[in-house]
Image (tube, rainbow, N blue to C red):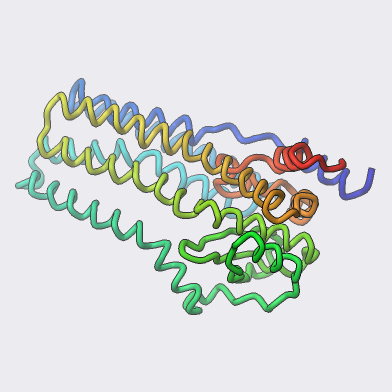
Amino acid sequence: MGRETRERKQNVHNTIRPFPTFRIILVVDLVISMFFPVLTFYSHLWYIIEIVSVMGAYTAGAVHDFIGYARKQNHRRKFVRFYVRGMMAVLPALLVLTVAFLFQFHIIKGIREWLMVLFVLTNILFAFSILFPFIRQVRIVKGKVRTLIKAPEKTMITLKMRLKAAGCREPLIYVRNLGGRKIANASQIGITRPVIIMTDFLYENMMESHLAAIIGHEMGHFANRDAFRSMLMFTLPVFLDLDLLFYALIKFTVTSSILLGVFALFCAGIDLAFIFPWSRKRSEIQADRFVGEKLGMAEGMAWALETLIIMNGRPPEYRFFSSRTHPSIDQRILLLRKNFDLKH
């Protein structure tokens, strides 16, 4: 067994998958914050207990990660990301609690007028959120993003020919300077044309044949319109949920509150905590399949995934939020070898 293979196995199999704390607390928070108004709109104690519990759980997690950083076991900003992500779970209850206080103590006069304004602003914000990926793409292509530079041309003649044969446009590739941090990663963010961003560490250190497979994988995301689909799946339930919340508060009835609770539980809870991550994982596997079926580079993709693990020093799916939205690299390699009959 080679050194790289031993290192990959050690990195993968000695890594414990994180407990889905965020997913569980988010769903529980949404259920409580949306269904308790049906029972008693002014039951502030429940909201206070809920918010304190969620903040306490994530503060404890952040402290745990900070201790790990102090012992040189975790990335220095992991505890900050964990805490910020945890605060997202508090927002539904915090919003309902704030409005409840305003109603009870008459702090703001004409509360229904304010809610109407918020209702309109929410829909305007949703419209802008739909346009944001297009705006980001234009800014990157025009060179307005200072942290990105257009990648120097590499030969990759074989990749270009295969992309052309598959009917794909040639991608625009940009490199992000991470200031010496050794993170190997790439993503496709283009909506109307393929725009691929990769870290400088990946671009400068990966073999050209493996890098071509990574680019082919990202082109699979573009061919499947994954960037736009993911954006819709993430933003649409949130804004529809807010719309229904404001509508229920403007014309508060038991029926509207029940509808709000059911809708919030399904869209914001089930979609964001389960359907969205499942869809993202499926898109990763489909992009790998695109590399094998359309570009004929399944073997190169499997080796590229092996190389990614070595370069990152641990499975990159455990960085940021991607442990919930990406299948394990081991699983992806096994599927590639199984689906395309590759040698181990």
